[in-house]
Image (tube, helix red, strand yellow):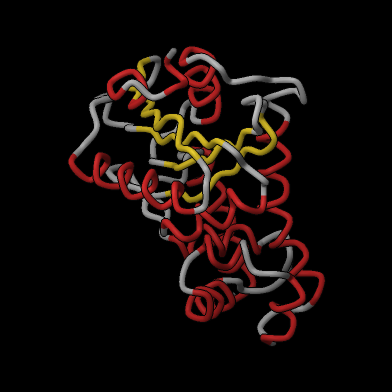
Length: 230
């Protein structure tokens, strides 16, 4: 009976995913439970998912934890730790596939089109960081975090760290508004100013913050005369 219920539960979760590919209606532990189906083919993964989230706090923190550290923490085996760490790496490689090594983002249109391609079809907010060299050539694209329908949160310090590790001279940030309204909120203005000021301290310039909603976009550069809009 327990085995049949276990199989039935997995099938129900799979069917829920096929109806909701954005996973908008999944709780974080359900997302992780589903991911772990393929690491533990014959085991109830819900308790493991909840233990991992209790330990690391968020999916973002977990997927950004070094697999060697996960093993040391003692909740999962090395194979499972490697499996979980792959999601961040695969996403990074997928982002990199959107641009070639010679892509230069020196116009608003180019930057806007890139952000639209990164967030196409999403029903939840995500924040991306694009790092550029002195010639405004792309050297890294990274998804910073996912949020929900109304917001996405992250720390300024984390963005600074990623920009420094990518040897950025300029950066562009972007997020989406699934609501269909591109205009920035008061929090969007505040966050942009915080990022701009923090980057100046480490001699990195914020070129733009682009908000995407469907085929529309809003550029802080266009509205505040940042260099990229010229």
